[in-house]
Length: 184
Image (cartoon, rainbow, N blue to C red; front, side, top):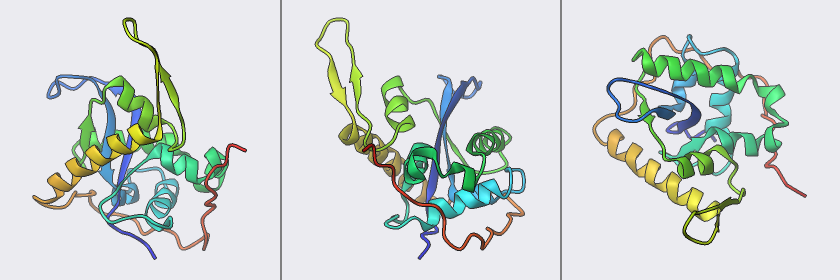
């Protein structure tokens, strides 16, 4: 069963915008934005299906691109879904052109790192004046929880507008190539 109220988080190359005090390195859009005709298709529509049809999605959740990669066997399934990089470029462009609602974000480096990697990835953080520490799944979940809360606060004022003239997601393939990545 599809969960239609899903939001997509793409961490991307930073860009400067006069209305933002820091470079924008991440963008959140409603999953339906991937159905916009300016998004590479059918790639965007298949990614939409991955976002909304994966088991255990919760309404209102934020799903990073890195989570999709994890769910598609660590990226091995992307060849069956599409060119995620083109889709990300397209949604960033849509956001910049205000052709959809979006949350452009200037994530701090650690948050960007955590959200750019899969849900089981651990990172060693080195400090100049303190011992190193390992961060990973718990810190990533905390970052996602904060972003989800921000999205829910935004949506309380009204839903994300995904853009106009959206395409319909393809019915084929009947089943998408889900296989959460196992490092073993």
